[in-house]
Amino acid sequence: MKRLVFLLIFALALSACSANEAEEPDDSASEDTNQQTEEEMEHKDERAEEEESEEDEESEIEVDAEAANEPEYYVAEDASVVPLEEDIDENVVLLTIDDAPAEYALEMAETLQDLEAGAIFFVNGHFLDTPEEEEALRQLHEMGFPIGNHTYNHPLIPDLPEEEQKEEIVSLNDRVEEIIGERPKFFRAPNGMNTDYSEQIVADEGMILMNWTYGYDYFEPYMDADKLAEAMISGEGPEVDVDYSLLKPGANLLMHDREWTNEALERIVNGLRDSGYEIVDPHLIQTLDEASEKE
Image (tube, rainbow, N blue to C red):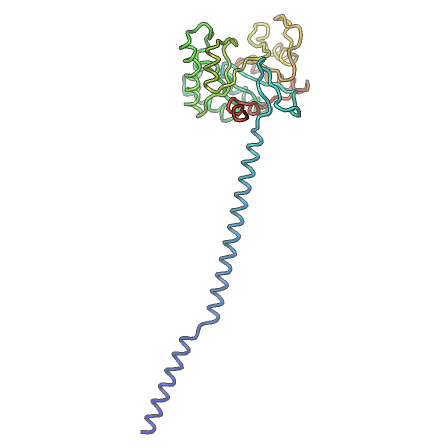
């Protein structure tokens, strides 16, 4: 009997010990869990810092881009390009190319891109009739050249009734927007001839009205690359009675999508630079929207 009681007591003691051991926490497992939690928190903090740094960098890039696009020039009534501030270089000229994209616009754009020179390409709607012409316009836009409005069919605006004047201007803006997703910000009338009504339409469309200060490639004596290059670099066109130089700070140079102009373009850009003039980036010219924001 005594032996039986002893065995019962011993069995109960063993059971109690086993229960206590099961209830005791595993210190090593707890330490591993704590260490894993700390590492996860550290990784989260590192990721948060990286994300914050990336956001700061993106913000800086956006600010830099906005600063880079701040206008530095405006177009004066005489079509010249004038600095908005006194400390901005005035020894610049603006290159503009009309009647695009006919045949040579893309070659001219590639030449300008290689030379890191900007220009505005003024387009006509009758050069946007085919998929190939549409693609040429897209490429000009994708290469970074601003697209200007030169009317749909290249008429003399004063010869048109007011409704047709509006159609020539607005329908081309619609067509350009359809192709590249943007409406032109600059307008140039064929032969530089406007009416009060067309000028109002241009303003209503939010475009800068722009003529030019000189150009020679549409005169027969200068339909030759060598003669044209000399005339554009010097500003003189003695064979059309311009025996003095029209080259001056802010000159607005008119050229066209023509074979001889395409051939002369590189010499014109280099010659102007050798004469002390930089080719102004058209993106630095104040648009009507930007002018309104500053008022």
